[in-house]
Amino acid sequence: MKKVLLYLVIAILTVPVLNAQNLIGKSDTATLIFVRHAEKSDDGTQNPPLTREGEERAERIKLFLEKSFPEVHAVYSTEYKRTESTALPTAKAYNLDVISYDPRAPKVFVKKLIKEHAGEVVLIVGHSNTTPFLVNMVLGEDKFQQLDESDYDEIFIVKSKEVGKGKVEVKSSAVKKD
Image 1 (cartoon, rainbow, N blue to C red):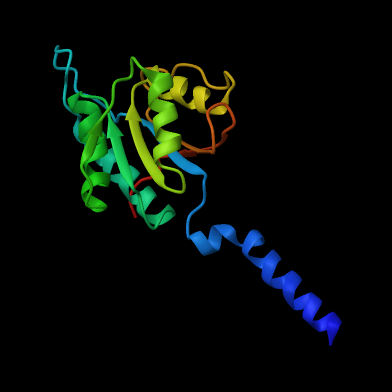
Image 2 (cartoon, rainbow, N blue to C red):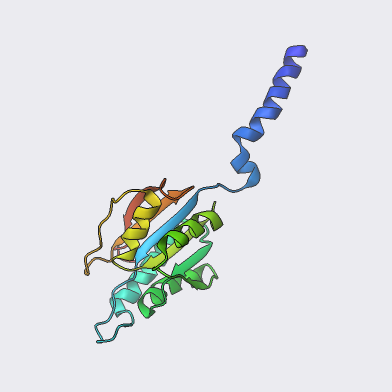
């Protein structure tokens, strides 16, 4: 009887520690989805809209996220037509607003993402130079170089509990819609 009682006490004390994530219902790992904006028009301005192909890619990104994640908790974009238009289909699908961020303050932004979105999935839309830079910052290593101007395919899925300690998986948005 004493052994049974001892095992019961150990189980009661151990199970919550082992299943803390399930009991709380939330992990402390942020899932940060970084993408470069989709194809932009060549209209001669500094702030061009997306091309038709870019609009289709923005839809494919949204479809990828809907298939991969039951929830997206926030959508961030720089304040350009091309990034906002890339973010918008996902924001609408998850009933979210697109939140503007300043790519000139990357360390502050990355810390904020990981701290404020622990246990959540977040889409961050940036540029050919800022997207790999932010991914590298979360990883804590210079793994990715600036994207080529013709490169719009990569979806960087980064999981991290703190800046400099992330893990990345790279997917492609090149797959056409079903």
